[in-house]
Image (cartoon, rainbow, N blue to C red; front, side, top):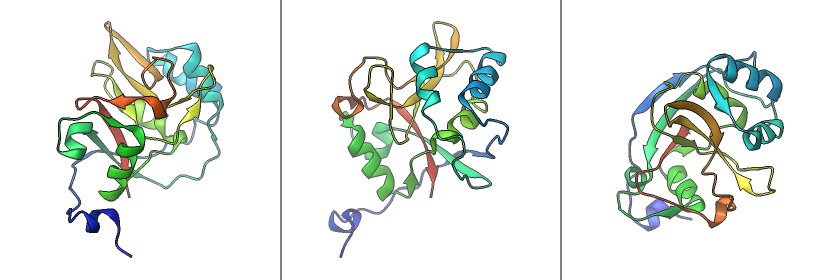
Length: 172
């Protein structure tokens, strides 16, 4: 049986590695995660704190991960907005996987405070409004944030991501 790339006659794209990350094994709970973020000057909203409580901090992680940062347009090679399901499928066709939720903090703590907002491609977590959501972080209004995906309080499956929006993935 052919996979979707073969059926569409697509050669998987090569995306450069942003950084190689070693998981921070000290982060074993939402409380520790929030304390580390706030100690480094990152703002964390209540919805995101709620989501951090949903993370499995005992998740079995590899020793290191290659992290890839790619825009929606770069992933698809087009100028259309795409749903999260489309983004996930396209990334997987190109050798990229979702980021384990318990690895997100290790990525955030390696990302400069004053850079643009970027989302984490991950299995969505229910937020305080009982909507599926993902983490994002970056600088907004001169403050460094660790927050949720887009803050429009829609379920992630109902949202289309703009061509310029960026995601972190892990390389398979």
